[in-house]
Image 1 (cartoon, rainbow, N blue to C red):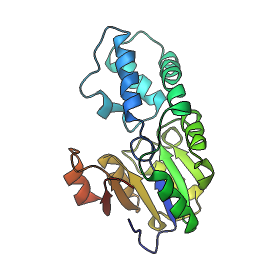
Image 2 (cartoon, rainbow, N blue to C red):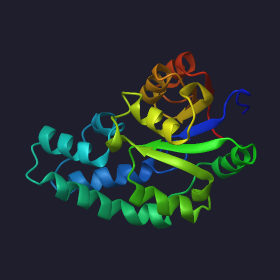
Image 3 (cartoon, rainbow, N blue to C red):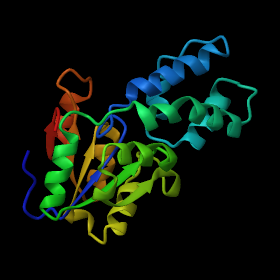
Image 4 (spheres, one colour):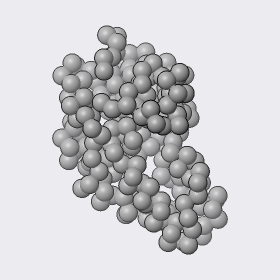
Amino acid sequence: MKLPDFIKGAIFDLDGTLLNSLGAWADVDVRFFAKRGLDVPADYFDSIKTIDLKDAAVLTKTKYHLADPCEDIVKEWLSMIADEYAHNIELCEGAADFLHALHHRNIKLGIATSCSPELFVPCLARHNVKDLFSAYAITREAKGKEFPDVYLLAAERLALAPCECAVFEDILQGIESAKRGGFYTVGVCLPSSPEYEAMKKTADQVISHF
């Protein structure tokens, strides 16, 4: 793909965009609810996909009437998923080459994610791309991705204006928020996705892979 010449920075979501990690999180959900004698609710992923672990724990505890303290829920999730990020989760196809190509063109790279740094930093280091990134912003520092704040924070840390940055996201809500924040937007979405047609109408570009 080709970005416009005015783009000086690229801000990436991680899970489902750069990292092929959604299957690992789905497995965590199944094991977490099964331990409590429950099936994963049909709308569960959609309800937590734009928020960080602490907020997801509050929602999960409240909505499903769990006795577990929120901090214990977060610890349980982290204990189940940390090894996957450290040893097994792969970059999405073509992502490493794409990141290196952008870096070679002196485009600053940033991250805007709800994922915890203790998870994604070892994963990026294992794939030899961690040092390509100049900054990252986490939703717990700002707001969930229904708001543009986390993208704005990432751009600020790259010392760039939103209009100088492209945001890469795999969820429509993130694309919509980034657009409201003044960013150029790239949807990373397969044609088979239920969000694909809406993504095409909203994002400045849509790609199915890197």
